[in-house]
Length: 132
Image 1 (tube, rainbow, N blue to C red):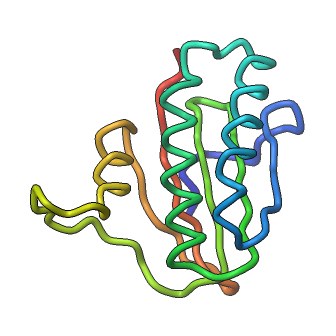
Image 2 (tube, one colour; image 1 turned 90 degrees about the vertical axis):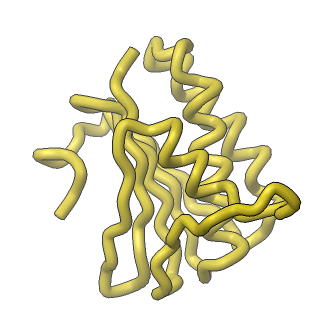
């Protein structure tokens, strides 16, 4: 099941293939920013960059290659990060002194909805935002 009702058109979709390398996070943030400006969604840049950063970081740290990022502009703005890992990301309780583990908490707070789809090659974590 996908979080959108039908396949997006080429104009509504952008995809990036990423290496399993933490250094890609800055580059994908820049790509997200450029794409949102091209779509006229400047108001969504900050939040979307943060969502994608958290999802890509999670995939790099806890997933497996290959990593794919998709932005879909349709009834909403959907960010998808797919990786070859089989595990399901789960938010967990964070103590004040914890240095990490806040990524999915941020995703849940910044998105209208989010979830995980398991595929034959791994999983896709998606986050949906309303269009500005």
